[in-house]
Length: 447
Image (cartoon, rainbow, N blue to C red; front, side):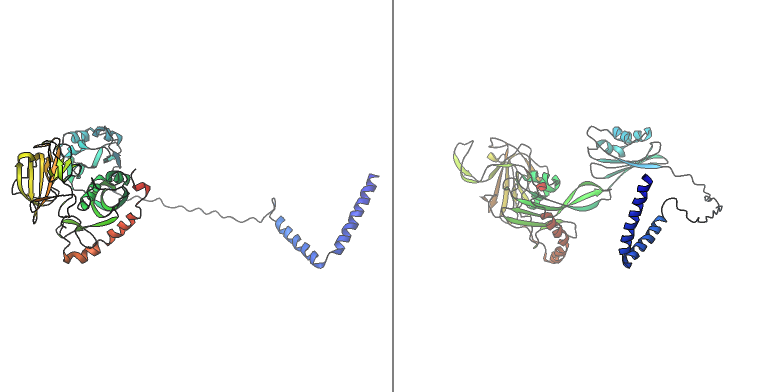
């Protein structure tokens, strides 16, 4: 019975297939044929398919061994250069130990030879480079000493020798921008500007801006300066190449000019001297404790009288600078002024510096001083209730207010140098413009 049912089902399926196949067109039959051929191709790559074996031929050939060139020279010793930075509390021995130097002979030389003494005056952060052999013996040592000279120690056949030379320094231009929020030095620190460059900035623009009493929140500066590098490591800042300062809405620009003799000066893009004939203030760090006045209550006489100068409060011993070049008229003691210096400048101008604790050794009547030279030190001599400098600016021997008086300009750039100056400052001007594009950045401002 079951076989009979299976036979009936098979016959029914065959008749249904015949009806379907009979209804196909020639195109459909062609498609089936193509698929069938494709299927054959696919199944030809299936696993266990037998492929024709490819003949493989093995070839062996003997090659001669390379012959080393005969040489009587000994193999060069393996040496290593290492570098380590001096840490706080380090000794030269501890630095050499970190550099894996194990050489009593070298330690004895560094300890006793006068040429090697600078290695005992290293400061934290300085880099010390040594060359050693595989056994840790010192072959060479390099370090930039505190005076900026390169100390070189070399091992020779007869022992060690030490030399000190001016290093081959590479000069690179670097730039920074900052905005005054609390003080110039705070803004400069925030802009990673070296202190030496910040002080130069005050000197370049010191004829127009009193940096210690007259800055305003929102003043901005940009500067391009030289940085000295030795073996890729910065070793100190050089001169300002170009700078700009925005103060109370007025922008001043300055560019460095070196003449044929090597003398340096700063001029704006038009060739006008940046440095005035007089500095605004005779000290770098101070505060005005008593200004120029027609009537002031004198703290000692207890009476009203004119105060014909400006008093700058500062600790005893603070250096006092000549605000302009000139010739010393007086260097001594005079009544209530105490120890004083009186300088005659070009034309009818003269300046007076009083209440000094002492006068600089080179300052004596008749001697000449240059602008910015230290001529004395703050004290409390004469009629003074505390350490300060009394500074007078005189025109025709008549005292004038040094804070507000119009200062004479310095000598402009010589006409013969104008064309060369314009060409030379082009790269610096481009770098300065780039530095200004960063002005106002949070990374270049001080809170």
